[in-house]
Length: 280
Image (tube, rainbow, N blue to C red):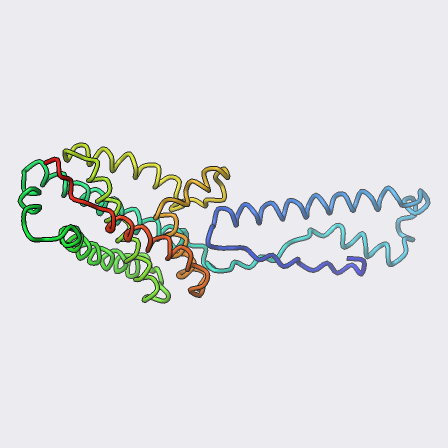
């Protein structure tokens, strides 16, 4: 700056969140403009009266400082992790998680409730099948349908919205664990539901806050701290975080291992504790 040759300041932005990155860039530009005005006013105040009156006789060094201060300072920004600033790349995990959890939780919760209403659940209980076999038999059909649904969503996202998926094996593992969490949650809701209507009501009661507080469509950092801690109990929060770490940040497994462990614990605990209700 003293040499009269100001250079743009390098600014690196996290493109995974376009809204926050744009706000940060605007804030930096405003801070540079405010700092430039203060520096210009400070130099003008410190100039002697004779120098102000005889502007043409200003020393070369001071003249260079004036030139640099009159030029607008700028920050040369570089967007990382999402160079094209595409919002669809950020929300695609939320869209996948929203569709999968909405269908799997609701359908799984209604399955046991429907059989309880029709009396077929009692017929299953008097057979030689074990509790775990009954639970697995209820989960597998919806698991297969959900896998097909994931394939359809990824094909639409890839060919229509031009979303690139990195490390497909890791993404499939993340989706599979999330599916097991959602199916286990549906079984848990069905244990408290005596009718299909109750199952749907309980599912909606749980899913509505999950979609808002899980960070599927907006960064969790914008929420209060208490809400951020609460969101950690939702499987969708860990799904979106792990999916973005792999697909946008190209992170290794060590960065999202905690999220994988959390989602692996959900279905394991539900299947281990789930018992077909006896009061049918």
